[in-house]
Length: 312
Ligand code: UDP
Ligand code: MG
Image 1 (cartoon, helix red, strand yellow):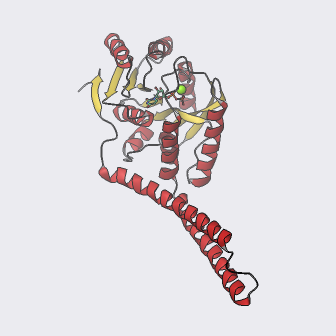
Image 2: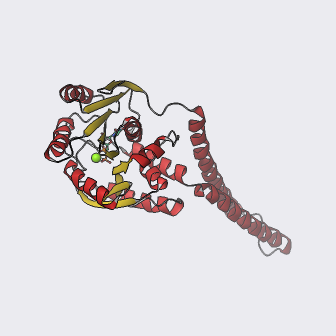
Image 3: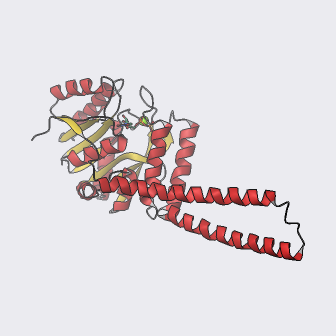
C-alpha cells in the first residue's frame, strides 16, 4: 500500500525541517515503508522552497510542488490530492499541530474499519486563541444548520482518504474548494479518530482573519442555497409589514385617528429597515453571482511553477 502524505506549506521555514524529520521518523520506525511526501509550496516568500529543495535532493520520496504564487491552503491541498499516487492519502498541516506520530494509529484504524475516510477530531486544541475556537464552533454549527451535508465539528483537513475518495474528489471541478465539506459530501464510510491538537511548533498562523472569512464564505455559499431562500423569506416578511403599515397609514389618515404630518420617524424607520433588507439580499445574490463568475471563467485552480521528484 502506497501512502501519500500531503503537506501544504506557506512561509514555514521555521518548522519545515522539523516536520520532515518527524514524518521521516514515523515512516522509518514502522512497517510503513512505501510512502511519498508531497510538499506543496504555496508561493512562500521565505526560504521554504529552498529548504524543501534540499530535502528533496536527499530523499527521493520527498516530492515538491511549487506554485507560482500564494493560492491558499485549500488550493495547495487540492494540488496534493490531484498529484498523489497513493492508495491512501493523508493530509496534514506543516506546522506540526497535527502530530505525525498518529499516522500509524490512523492507518491501523483505517484497516480495521475498512473505512474510506478517517477524519481526525480535535478533543483538545492547545495553544489556540479563544477567539479562533469560538468563531470556529459558531461557524460549523451555522454551516450545519444551513447545508444538507453534515460537516463534523472540531475537524480540520487532517484526515486519511482512500483511492475511492481521491478519484471522486478529482472529478469535482469547482474552483473554490472547501475540502472538508466536499469530503463529507462524497460519503462512503467515514470514521472519526480523536486526538489532541498541539500548538504550532514555531512561527505565526498563516490564516489571518481575511483568509478565514474567505474560507468561511466558500463553505456557506458552496454548500447551501438557504441564503437565497432567506432573501425570499425576508422579501415576504417585508411585504407583509409593508401591507400592514399601509393599512395603518390609510386608515389612520382617513379616520383622523393619527395625525399624518408628524410621520417622520415612521418613514425613516421603514426606509432604513427596507433599505437594509434590500442591501442584504442583493449582497447574498452578489455572492452567488461572484461564485458563478469564478466557475464559468474556468481558470485553473492554481499554477504549478515547478515539480521535483515526480516522474514525467
Ligand atoms: N497554508 C498554505 N497556504 C496559505 C495559508 C496556510 O498552504 O495561504 C498552510 C500552512 O503552511 C499550514 C496549513 O496551511 O501548513 C495551516 O495553516 P496554519 O497552521 O497557519 O493555520 P491554523 O492552524 O492557524 O488555522
Ligand atoms: Mg496551524
